[in-house]
Image 1 (tube, rainbow, N blue to C red):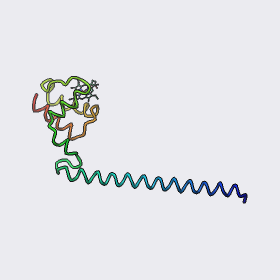
Image 2: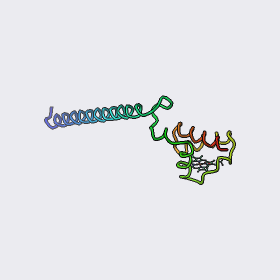
Image 3: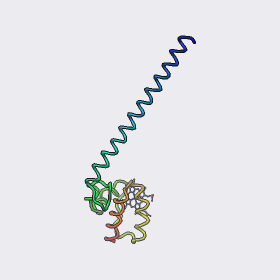
Image 4: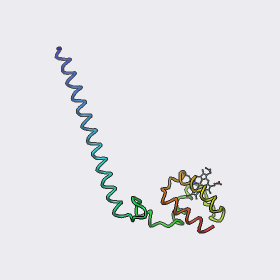
Amino acid sequence: MDLRLLKLKIMKKINKIILLVTVVVFVTIIFTQCATQQNATSTESTSFAKGVPEYVLQKSGAQLWAESCIRCHNTASPATFSDTEWDVAIKHMEIRAQLTKVEAEKVLEFLKSAN
Ligand code: HEC
């Protein structure tokens, strides 16, 4: 076999190995990061909402409502809508505001308690 061709083949092999090692290192980093993150949150959270950061659990529905909903528009008074109407509006706004389930439930609870 031609020596240059052989060199080329070896280079290609080395490139493959480097790529493989990089991928393995990345995957390992991501997995360990996720594992440590899960540990951090699981020690903080209660059984009521596993994996939800403490700062979210500490916030009241009214606080979350005041903070999240004002980002895009004036906040309609809780009295504007009935419970069922809020059910629908929150489903829609949960997505728009990128709220977590827990946050959306808290906001909804607050809105229903104040209308
Ligand atoms: C990312 C921007 C954004 C955020 C954050 C947001 N909204 Fe909205 N909201 C909109 C837009 C845009 C509309 C009007 C168009 C639509 O209905 O999609 C709207 C409309 C509404 C309406 C009117 C619906 C109707 O049928 O008249 C209500 C009520 C509402 N939002 C409540 C909320 C509440 C409560 C929150 C907080 C949990 C919130 N929004 C957060 C963008 C947002």
